[in-house]
Image 1: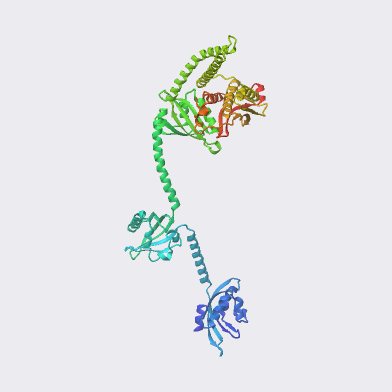
Image 2: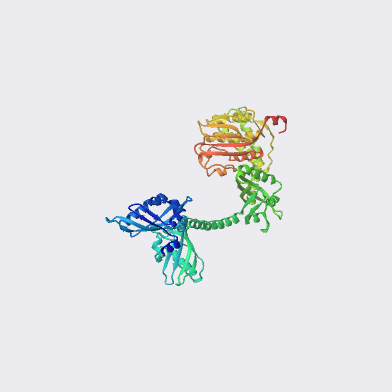
Length: 624
């Protein structure tokens, strides 16, 4: 019967004489490691030791010693044994000492070996799966949970991941039986809404999801977002399976964005009101695709119905024929300078003509592949009409004053020449003062007439290829007496002897005289004014650098306006009409050039202008 039981349970048996080492195994014991007993003969305790895994021998020996000492009623060990095919099999080794020597030493011990490889592999796989799951939960930023709530209000978390410590500041064990105390951590402003969301989920067995704040000790509140699927239990409670995560950073960004959007909306309303009152519209255009967006005010300025779809072609159709080229040149210039600034006329659908001022900015093409330009347009018709009236008045007055002033200047020069009579020194001084004031008045009138011609497009230019160096030397020579009067040194830096430009010689000298005289006046005694030139891509840049006080930031935007002069007695004492830079800008524009400046407080200012350069070969061939 015993043999049948053993064979039926596939148990290996062994008996061991502890004192002699003699060991007897049954056939099943040998089969566990893939052998027959005959293959293993002769067998002894050493046979078992040879098959046992070295790492398991120490634990097995300790268990034996504890059993021999009477500390354990049985020897019970799980270890690995080497199979004939080379792999390891797990065996469950059980046994007990059944007889002792007269002096109390263990003598005979009987036991069994059971193959538990499949069971052990299943345990290891289960452990690996459990470890993987725990690692997964540990790396999830939020907490996975089961939350249970009973009709009497009791609540608990039967299961929750360890991240509950980061969310609520408690351990899973603290809330496994009762978690009602966690409601004390909910922000008072959010408690009612959270309770209502849970009640709704209980009543309808619907998905629970809510955002709320939790207050932890001595820390700012954190924002949580939770969601869970409810399940009704047999005892009437509700069990949710879900996930809660910390969304503090996202929520604070969202709340800030919401605040900014509200402020932006208010600002937009104010801007729209100001835009309507000032007749300033805003637009965005793509010079590549022809797409165009208009704000509502632009429809009003251009006289279109808001049902009309704006486009670049539609805008071009409104341009006054005499201004279309000016607008095109400004757009092309914006590709390099990034600024589109032009005043021009438009023709409305009803035939009326209006003046508008366009001002826009544009990123460089390499950063702006769609050639997007964003800007504003303002109806400046009334301003232009007033300007035209003023220009006409100034022109009329200038022409009426020019003839008598010429006669007065001539008479004063004749008197001072001494050909008619010798005057008392006091009289001569008065005549010199009169002649100086007359010259300044003539200069003002000439400037006014130049402005009037530039505005009307009546400036006649004699454009030709000019060697640049002689032109700059001539300007320095003309301004040398003026520099001596102000005790300023003029410096010339130039190495491009054969460089030529295309310009009007007389008007170029007028621009150079304006820039050099300003630099001399504002540098002061003992200082230096430097005139230089260099090639800048397809243009020549001519620079006039002074050592003056710099240009105040508040005055810089108006620097090239007519009659512009910075406030301050020290600046106004320098004299001038306030028209020189405006005239220079207009003349350079007529010569396909441009003007600009760099300034630094108490260091100085550099005014520069650029004009196209031309090689000597082209100019000599007559093609330029």
